Length: 206
Ligand SMILES: [Zn+2]
Image: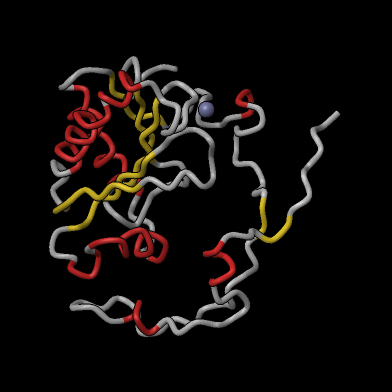
């Protein structure tokens, strides 16, 4: 018997009562900036915000969490963390990867000893990604809206790509054509082996 899905109702907080739900908002503030990437954006009306939210992947039953399963896309792992790349085939940016603990935890309930290793790991990933010849910078993000398993994303910002500075880079990832498979494999290999120099294993058998 599957668990009953709770009925949703509009969220009712002071902020939600203030939010201009139903209005179509002016997006011109997104478009500008010193090196614009976007000519124009047309927003859809702000939707009603319903709670409780539908569960994320692996939230109701951790046994169904895809991040917990072994993956052919894991390019590096150690006892605590793993890095995966190439999930959807070649990317348009030089390198995109997901970073996750091996254990099924959220940021909010992860043991502090585990999180203590995250800072040094992010440093190693940034250094490894910058070994790719075309890369200037490694950006990190953490949203966790799709899965109930802590994960972060790493995005390589190409050298000289001033339009890719900051939070716009993941949008460029969605519009850039896929690079050749051999080039992605070469770049993934650079990062995997650079990470393994500091511990853990490149392309581990899971
Ligand atoms: Zn999990």
